[in-house]
Length: 199
Image (cartoon, rainbow, N blue to C red; front, side, top):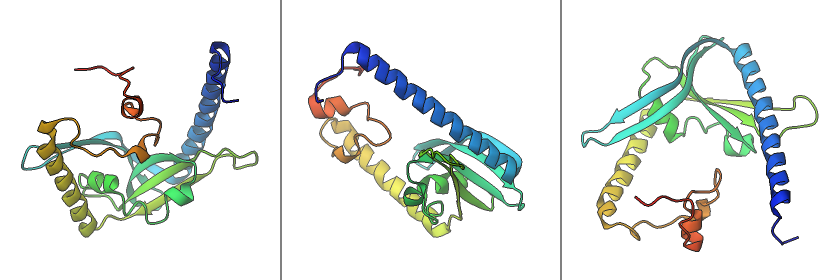
């Protein structure tokens, strides 16, 4: 039916969706804990703040999920992810080509590599119900230079256009619903300010 759900039906639907996500989250967390127990001998940091500043005073702030030493003796900076299709979205070269991991790795002199630890969001009926994918890589100096060049270019464009306000940046409406809806989706598509605060 294309008609809107009534208030009671919508509440039931929302409750079921919430419970489903809670259950999935717990299953993925349990599997991640198992992976860590089986593969990690030492945890060096969790949610470490990364703060980089260039010569112009522009700051990049982020948080690395965790840095660990694995049982093979190698130390990795790891970013946790979930994905509906880890093989598609996190192929074997994805960690080596991640701007995020490249930036974070700049703060760590003594790591052997970077990695993604990906929990598959597709829960299966048979064991293993949750699959975990570990994708490791190394960041090259060339890729690091390329990443920071892109950041400098984007920062320059923002500084150039920011004073002019609305209309100076092209909207990417293909990304409106990626990773959940953008908070400005109703403003862009319907002109509605509902749920937004004007400062």
